[in-house]
Image (tube, rainbow over all chains, first blue to last red; front, side):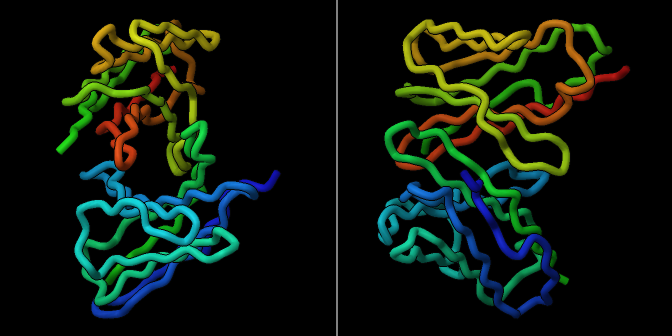
Length: 112
Length: 108
């Protein structure tokens, strides 16, 4: 079974730009969640989607948004990028029953 | 809001020494999960504990869930260089609350 796939793996943007990251969950997983990981803040929850509906949202500004498609693939968007948005963005999928998270390899965003 | 803290933040050990990381939640958890992230990698699920006082072993790793279901620990016996990485605990709620992580360095 293929794992969680995130694209792109690396990207460099400048302040003020926007970025879209993509996540394809494991087949059959309907829940997709996103996390921001920085050295100082650890793993911070962004949001979780289940069957195209946002279930929960973390404490991030409105510049961070996401969506989920009918095939469970998910995207997250960050608008008006700031230097502090530089981070590893991790996507994870799970079957709701077990709750175990399967992470993708992440998208490393650098904002200059 | 719910907080999950881990100590220590960093730990350096000589290969062969034991290692323990502790996880404490501000609220009672329905279950707790542990993940390992190798340097440059992504978190990988290790185990889930559900019952109060539960103890589970995976080879040299021993996981415990506290009686009050508010704390947990991970103990590694006789560390090896392959144990290097950051260990996170995580408690489910409306979202997954990840602990602050313990970074383990093993000195050969």
